[in-house]
Length: 110
Length: 114
Image (cartoon, chains in turn green, orange):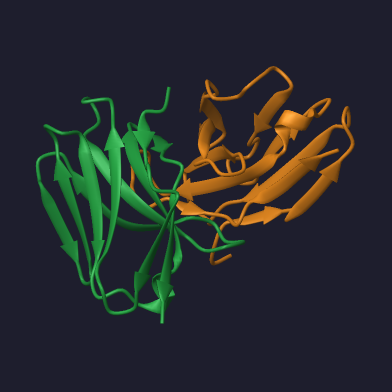
């Protein structure tokens, strides 16, 4: 049974607009959450994280929101740029093991 | 090196063949992880080393999978008698400490079993 669900396999957004990627998880014991970004033929790279003691973390154009009661995480990218086109993974940090969603492919249209 | 290096980048194996996948972590990184990523899925944990000690191998799917890191640096993931369901990208990651969000991933080895 999937512990981390990214229900949108792909998302297309106009350049300059906001991209919102969503993620749901099942295990309320998770306390550290990450987003990774992956370009084709490259390894995933860390993007942004949030601890369960917070509900928001911002880093430049990227903001992650955490709703613990709903077990929901979202990543906002604003404004979206062509270089943001990639696969985004929602990840739970379970001690040293990372538990990954299936990913959302974000396409930024010029 | 500057990053995590994995070789080969691509491997085609005939069913039943043994394969060995290599990972060169970032120098000085204590922790090393192997993940398996099937097509259209997120990576799944296979095993974790701290220096040369394999502390967790709970994610290895069968006893055909074996990983080692004898000198605490380079690691090898070996798959014996490969099956079609072993086809996946195998990712290696390293970090300077356990539990850090500073994992650096390699580009992976894409294994195709025919």
